[in-house]
Length: 320
Ligand SMILES: Nc1ncnc2c1ncn2[C@@H]1O[C@H](COP(=O)(O)OP(=O)(O)OP(=O)(O)O)[C@@H](O)[C@H]1O
Image 1 (cartoon, rainbow, N blue to C red):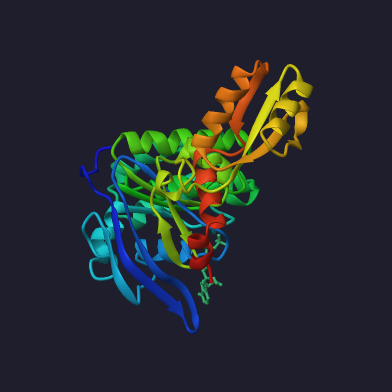
Image 2 (cartoon, rainbow, N blue to C red; image 1 turned 90 degrees about the vertical axis):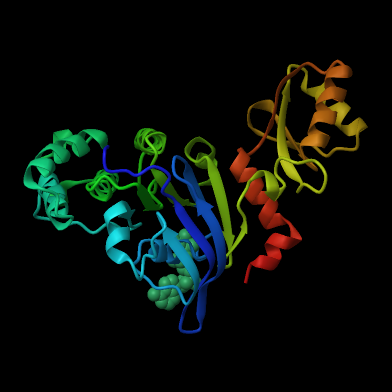
């Protein structure tokens, strides 16, 4: 990867966009820096795709400002196109063209010199592991393979900013892990990567930062700030516990007035008010001699923060 200028990222400030009477994006502000994978996280219809289309220069904001590497995607479209790779959630491919031909067409569209394209296409096929299908027509590709072709297409001009709408949808677990490696590798090389997702459980492994959106607004740009990790004022979230002696565990929880719900594998789940209460409970249980073998939140860091956000009055208020 040679074409990148260091430090290029995405800046979104007070952006809004409506479609007639539908206010798809009402007020979004965040930055996605170079060298990091930033996840745009929110429920269906919260405005993620609309925002990404504005970042990619495919839709004009009604208000606010978007900058990609310092350039305005509407007024400086050529500069943004040159540095931005875009992968839509639904990827249209020409059925009759082979995988290699697809990439060659896009290399041409980005005006890559012939010799550069000739070297770039096999490199991309290796990156997304589509070499065995290089000569296969797009119509025979599975959904996951098409997603990978979409990723290769987005990377064809060696962009410094990569915007991917639900890139993991349709991928099997192995392909998701590969996707994670590819995106991590790109970020490590200095690329700014913005992905949208609602597969919360996977985001801890994929993303460095999370921007939460609800009802067209960004409601928090930092999982820690969203309450999932803090003690005071944190949302009530589930924790899973397992002990060699389940009866002793249940008795100790009952002593502390905690309601324990059964969970798979002989575990139990309790709802606690944050990490501070969890730490106190763990200390008490160990102190009381309960032989604990497992004590962990039921959800990952980003998932917890998101659940805390949607459960809090502030989060609910942000939803339409
Ligand atoms: N072209 C359009 N015309 C009218 N309404 C639209 C258009 N595009 C999006 N919307 C509406 O704007 C809102 C936000 O949609 P958007 O696709 O941005 O959400 P999203 O967070 O990407 O959802 P999902 O996770 O389901 O992809 C929705 O209510 C949607 O119906």
